[in-house]
Image (cartoon, rainbow, N blue to C red; front, side, top):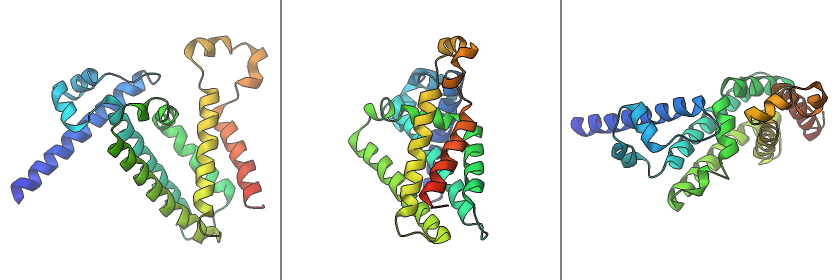
Length: 212
């Protein structure tokens, strides 16, 4: 049993090393996914070893995105489980600050449908979606209780908050070339600061949704 436990720990540690290497490489050039070979080199492993843990490079990054969603929902549950009154503004401030500190989540999330989910085994994609919906419903239930909402309303608020976040990020995530062009003041209306725009948009949505 001890040997089995050590083996399991070693496998988990190696999987973690692969994910950490993938994250580092992705943040160097977040507009494209690094190859499995580059990830293997960065983690000090053979390419074949990486494929023992992940079937495709997309699977690696979907695993990273799953981790990011889990951490984000943990943060949301913490906000609404603090045992004190939570305002929409208070939640939004912490939510936006959290995302600002983890830009890799926004970039990976923007790639989810068009890239990450396109080269996945069906069972693994299904598992990813099931884990996500379970965490979402658990977190939504915390909102229902704290804000005294009808059952399921909290999950709906979070789903729409995510949709707003993803949509704004994708609309404002310009390529490096376009970023240079848009520095001209004439383009100011279409290049607002993402953090400010997200906070204001969510404030309007939450206040309307909660009848505040």
